[in-house]
Length: 174
Image (tube, rainbow, N blue to C red; front, side, top):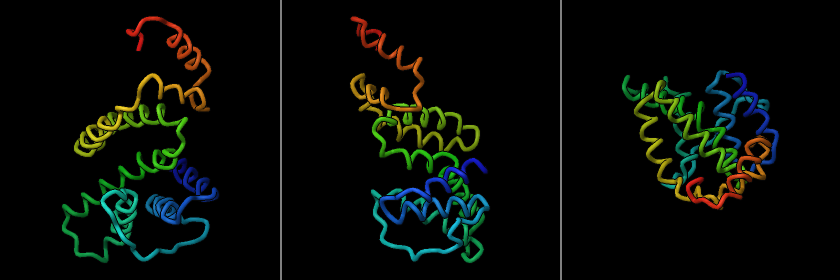
């Protein structure tokens, strides 16, 4: 978990597009038992929209952090905890790399693998997330996979294999 706290702290030092990005990182650090470098502060909840998944993640983390101030049933507390663990373990890192087009192909495939592994933690959340993620893989075409040539996380060996695959005449290679 220290690695994730360090990841969040590193991102907090970058220029972020909006304050809710900062808030998600700070809440993740708090959820992991740390204190953000700028100290503890909580923002007033703002508007929430169905398309703003990050806002829902922020509210789930806040509900969990302040769970003793709510009259939650045990099932509700367990559910909020499960969602928060998913957010912190899997979603935060993916969210902050999502805007990097060159990272998208590898990141999406890695995320899908992580979701499959997550079945051992929470099968229900994993299965729902896998189904949702698979609905977004339509764009992973050979043309879009070419963005991986610009991804520093893709090894030179893998890039060479990609070049070889692109130079073959057979469609079966894809």
